[in-house]
Amino acid sequence: MKVAIQGARGSFSEAAAARVWTDVELVPCREAAHVVAAVRDGTADAGILPVENSIVGSVTATWDVMLEAFEGRAMRLTEEVLLPVRHALLAPKGAEAGKLRRVLSHPVALGQCRRWLAAHAPAAELVAEWDTAGSAEIVAQLGDPAVAAIAPAAAAGALDVLADGIQDDPSNQTRFLAFSRDGAITDGPRKTSLVLRLDHRPGMLAAALQAFAARGVNLTSLQSRPEPAAPWTYRFYVDVEGDPAVPPLLEALESVEALAARAVVLGCYRAATPGAAPAPRLSRPEIPLHDRRRFPAGTVVRVGSVEIGGPAPILIAGPCSVESEEMIQRTATAVAAAGARMLRGGAFKPRTSPYDFQGFGAKGLRWLAEAGRRAGLPVVTEVMGWEDVPLVARHADMLQVGARNMQNFALLRALGRCGRPVLLKRGAGATVEEWLMAAEYVLSSGNPDVVLCERGIRTFERATRHTLDLNAVVLALQRTHLPVLVDPSHAAGLRALVPALAMAGLAAGAHGVIVEVHPDPDRALSDGAQSLDLEAFERLARRTREAG
Image 1 (tube, rainbow, N blue to C red):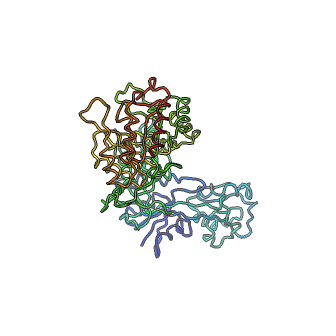
Image 2: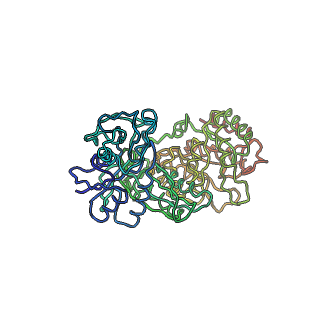
Image 3: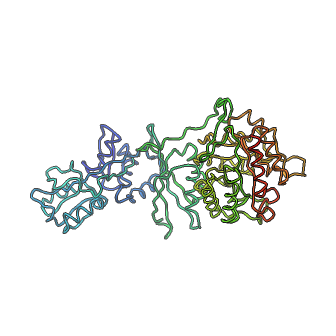
């Protein structure tokens, strides 16, 4: 097998090639473009190129060559190699480091040894050459004791090793990527490299990166390079873990391609380190993940120190919207004293009218988290879109899916990878089967901590906001091992009905109740009519303790 490398025999590229192939015939090349050309025209079967160094960063010329050569051509990346790099100072016999006038090497190698050279060969001029081992060949031909090379010790030949291990960082490594025409990849963890060109509009880069973050795709490298054909615009080289043929990376790439002016996948290849294994394609399990047959005794979901699904009913209380720092702190202190185990509050509010109060967003999240911390209560709050999941998960102990978003499948998948428990409210027009399958989306994406919440369904009755479906509570408890809560506030829409409906939900077997509580409901910015005041919540908490 013929393998093209950038550099001469004895170079680090040869050592990297030896990590991938055995019993090969090397095709040494001077430039990265020559390596790619050798593979493209059949002079070599495969090639390998350095793309990044742990000290000096990206080898930008290699990335640019790959973009030009790989787009639309039958070449694919196949494997990543992380090669420890140990540099030596090589010179003719009789040379001394302190008397050197010139030191030759590849510019990346010179950058990796800059501090050592400044200390031991301060008078030497640093001269960039095409290769490390090639520099040793030039120095050997010159035979001048005032001229030395930085190269692997294995490339010394007739030269003396004046010093070994002169790289500025002993952990120095260079990252190589191998490629071939057939693009065959061996088994193992995967990485994917791609190039993005984004329009000059606010938030475009953030939106592209968020497409990966919201789906739990780990981004391992991000580099920018000028776009030659369009001055003052840039292309971004991105490395991520995973295989683009498999969710969630497949979904992320579809979103990025819709955002980007240009998106090119350079290739998917075997990663050098564990942790990037391709996600398996989902197949329908014989028994659904939510099915009670899997855990007949039921599941307990832990939110901080609180257990939902155990024998003791859980009270979750707080305002519909976080209206101010003082208001949420006052509410948290009061409901904690009355017996609430968790604090609820809306920072992002889905409202029927776009002119209604929409919440304070990130500011409200911070107020809510701080109020919960001071009161000793874990907090739960609603997340409205998959792009907000990382932000909300940073501040909240539990993330809530509102009734309007019960079948927002991109959001459900993102919540499956958020690392936080999820409270899934039933849609106002959803069947129990649809509700349970929405939970299946979260479970199948890797998150076992899901709690269901019945919050009322739409019926012909208009005297109340919705109708609390106690049938669904009992049926869900029979069909799933997941804990079930009731939300009487949204079901009734009238605060006078909330205590009785809360007790009815607990009597039906619910594991807890989530209610809206406000210090002054008549002045609330949202849902004041269904919110209990602090005294009414204290009475409800006392009734639940007496009933339990």
